[in-house]
Image 1 (cartoon, rainbow, N blue to C red):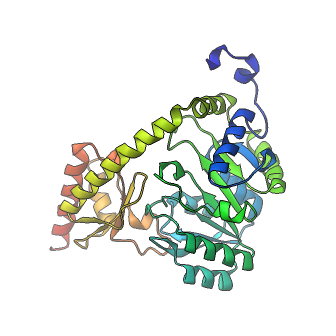
Image 2: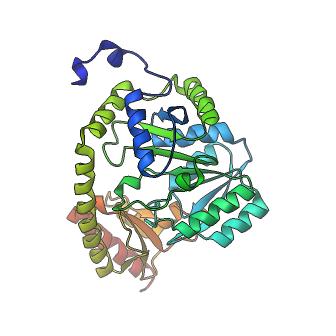
Length: 339
C-alpha cells in the first residue's frame, strides 16, 4: 500500500517532528494512560534510544550527575558514559527504587536527571507502585530533578500500572517510547513526549544531529498498523503467549538451581539468582565457549553487587541447546569452585 502512495512519502526526508498520522495516534494512546498532551508536546525519533540520547544532549553537560536504577538497562550506562556524566545507582525493589535512598541521593548528590522504566522494569521485570511514584515525584519537585520515563515495555502489561508522566502531567517527566519490542526492531521509530518548549529545542537538536526525524516509510507503516486495530489483537495474543512462556521458563530455571527474583506481571524478562552461589559472569563466560550469550547481573549493576544474578529473555529460551549449554556452564563453574 505504501509503495503505491504519493512520491514524497517515498523520496523526501519528512517532517522535522515526524509523521502527523502517527503523532495523532500516539496522542490518543497517551490519553489512555491519562496523559493529556498536544501535538506540540510530541515528536518522533529514529528510535527510543535516540530519544533518550537527544534528551541527554539537551539537558546534560560533562560532569553532571545522573541517577539510574541499580540494576538498570545496561545501555543507559553506556549512553551516559558517552555524555561524560557521573552515574549513581539507587537500589531497585519490587515496587520501584528504594525511596529512602532515592531521597538521600537527591539531597546529597543533586542529580540533574533520573532515567527509569516505570512498567516492567529492565532487567528486573518489576512495576512501580502508586505510593512509590508519588514519593518519587514529591522528591523530584523538591530537588528540581528531571525524569526520563522509558515506557518501551508498557504495552506488555495486562493492565496499565501508574505512570510518572501521567501523575506529573509532563512537567518534569519526559516520556520516551518506541515499537521495536512490540512490532519490529527493523522498523525503527521512537517518540518523545514532554514540555512544548523542550520539544521545540529537541526537534532542532534532532535536525542538527540527524537531519530530521525517522523514516517517513517507517512511521507510516506503524501508523497503518495502529490505526487498523490489528495491533491490539497482536498484543493480546503476545501477552498470553508470554505469560505461558514465563511460567514454563521459570519452572525449568528453578529445576536447575536458578530462582526468579519475582514473577513479572508481563514482558519477557526474568531477573534471577543463581542459588548455588556461582558467579554469573563466570557462568556466562563458560556458556560463551559454546556460542551462547547470557546476561550476567553485573552488566546491569552500577555498584557491581549483582554477581549472583542473571537476566533471562524467555522469548529466546525455546532452543534445547540453550538449556544444555546453561546446565553445562553451571556444572563447570560448580566443579571449578569445588562444589
